[in-house]
Every structure is written in C-alpha cells, then in structure tokens.
Length: 411
Image (cartoon, rainbow, N blue to C red; front, side, top):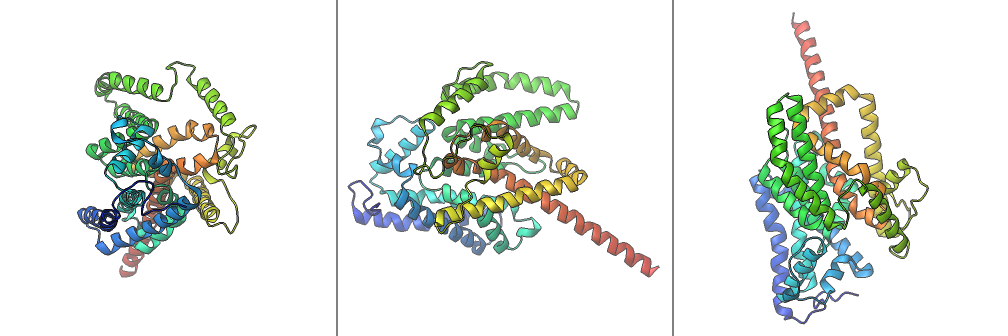
C-alpha cells in the first residue's frame, strides 16, 4: 500500500496539500492555454483533461496494487547532489531526486507530470480535429479511449513512456503536409534523445532519408550532395554515441550482436508480473511475432487491467485489418494519398524502420505493452488521415455528380 500523503519522505504535510491543489489547477490551466493558441474552445480542452484524469486514477490504483518503475525511481536512495544529469534511467533518477530534495511527495510528483500526458492527448486532438469523423469531440474521445488509451495509461508519473509519448506527440505536431516546424521537431528530438535515444535516432534517420528522397525525386543532385556532406559528420557522431549507449560495437556484425543480446536478456528475464505476460517467442514465425508484439495479451477476464488491455488490442487489431483491407481494395487511392500528404511521408519511413526490427527483437510482452505505443500513436494518425482522405474524396465526387445531374436537369 502506498501512503500518498507522506510518500516515503519526511516532509511538511500542509505544504504538499497546497502543492496538490496547485498541480491540480495547473493540469487544467496549461493545456487550456496551449489550446487557445490553436483556437480550441476551453470546454473541449476540459473534456480532454477529464478523460486523461480517468486514466490517471486507473494508473494510480494499478500502481497502488502492483507497483511501477516510476515508484521504483522515486524510492531509490539517491539525493540531488549524488546524481549527475544523464540520459535514459539517469535522467529519471535525477528528476526524482530533484522532487525529493524539494520535499515534494510522490502523489504531487505524479500529478505534476500528468500535465505531460494531458498535453499528449491534446496534441493528438489538435492533429485530427479537422478530420470529418472527429469534428464531434465525443466521437474523438470514444475512438481514442478504445484505440489509443494505452498512451494515457502508460504515459503517467515518472515512467519513461510519459516523456517519450510527449516527445512523439511533438514530433507529430512538428510535421504538416507542406512543411516542418523545425523548432518543435528539435524539441521533440531532444526529449526523445534524453529518455529513449534509439527512437530519437530513428526519427533523425527518417528525416534524412525523406530529405534525400525529395532531392532525388526533384533531380536536385547539387543539393543532394551538399546536404549529405553537411550531415555526414553529425550523423556519424550520433550513430557512434547511440551504439555506445546500448553497449554495442559499431561494426557490420551489429545485427548478430543484437540477436545474441536479446537471447541473453530472455534467459535472464523469464518472468514479468509473475509470468502472466511472458510468452516465449522461440520458433514462432515473423508474422506471429508482429501479432504478439502489437495485439497480445488477449484475455477475456473480470480483471479490469486485462480487460482494458484486451479491448485496446482488439480495437487496434480491427483498425489495422480495416486499413490493410482498404489499401488492398483502393490501392490507387492509397498511392494518391501518399503523394498528397508530402511531408507526412516521414511518418511512413519511421514506421518502416521501427517495424524492421523492434518488434522482432522484443522478448517480453510486459515491455511491449508500453513500447508499442511509440509506433501506434503515429500509425493511428496516418490511418485516420487516410480514412478521412477517402471520405473527403467520396463526398466531393458525390457533390460533383449531384451538380452534374442538376445542370442536366436545368438544360
């Protein structure tokens, strides 16, 4: 049982009660101020915030019974002056130590960082609000809760995913059909670089490949050569750094080393939540590994956590199936969509690189439960965009046919 009012450190209760009220208010004020810049009514923003709070409370109840990595970082016996700022786990320990040195208890830590989750939710709405299906906020809330609610559940407190999902939402926000907002993109890459360098590296590679593709298709050979000369050294340095961060040798033997590392970690980590989420991936086909990574576990049970996970997985599976079926039936329209969205094709490149090996090297479904949302937040946006493109195309065709029939009747 977690005693949230004291939360493992000796502190003045009255101060933390004041902070509790302050952070609660900030959970509303900050997203509402951001939403105003995008012309979003405060009532819509309030619904988004309240929807996020539902999953915040579910997460707190789950944490209270099961414990989480976030609570583990907070409980570590480190103080601010004992920890140098670093990346990945060191960054989380540093943040936890800063809260503790300020006498802020765990509940207030969780509540203050819940602002990031609210902003992630809000940013996704900002990106899809012009889609016909989501012009009604209640349709958006229903779809998001059914399909992407894992982002809200795992994007909480001091979990690494909270910062990663926020960084991914900024990446999504930075891209539009005709341009890239490099300031927001840089902020996204920095956040992801601190908490999950590998994902930041994939984003950089996706961007580099897209720009190269633009120059090649535009037959702009001069800029293509100049661009690659300029980025060659920075990309090389970043690549070496990423390899060192994950303790890999920079060599052509990388993939073999990666497979050996995964097999070693599987052998040393055979349980997760008492083995409930652990499934051996040995001797499984590539297709089955993808299915297990994105859509497992599927357990029809009265356990609320597993029921929530099962609902998410079933609806995501349905969404993906409908998408691929639609692409198959309307492939020419899909190619037209790809041409139309221009800069959004960076997202497709990211999806292809991510899927080329991340799901295939996953050895624990407990990890996949959180990890997969780094891709699903991007893929779900593109799928909704494609469906909206089809609907808009259909609606325009019907309007033109109706107009044509009207003109004939008049003549």
